[in-house]
Amino acid sequence: MKLNELRDNPGAAPKRTRVGRGPGSGKGKMGGRGIKGQKSRSGVAINGYEGGQMPLYQRLPKRGFNKPNAKKYAVVNLGLIQKFIDAGKLDAASVTEDSLVASGLVRRKLDGIRVLAKGEFTAKATIAVTGASKAAVEAVSKAGGALTVASEAAAE
Picture 1 (spheres, one colour):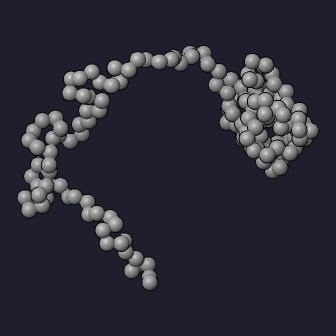
Picture 2: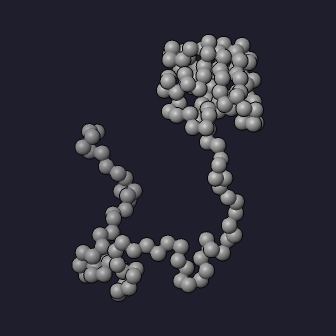
Picture 3: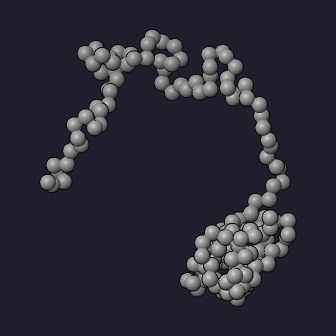
């Protein structure tokens, strides 16, 4: 068998209906859209409209709100920090928020950097960040390093 002999199994891909290609096709002239009206025109979508009945999105109650002053943390996983230390892009002696940005691991600090415990961490590193998960603090101390969190409120 050659590449030019490859074929789909018969009936696997149904032929696409070509609309508006003459009366013999069965979908000619108006292409199954009926006569006139909004739905026969192109480029018209009536999403969420239920024919005058109160639409579902209006029948359901509003829930919750978005905190206008919510803190947005840049998130880093321990596995990535380990990878950068192994590659020599980070110095394990002191990993700070500025060094994480300088190494390219984090694009920008936002309201601070939060460390999460995803991935393996074996380096004996000293890390100083705004926030960290409990598991991340444990993983770093288990590896023989120290993870200090600037604000206690962020470490929950």
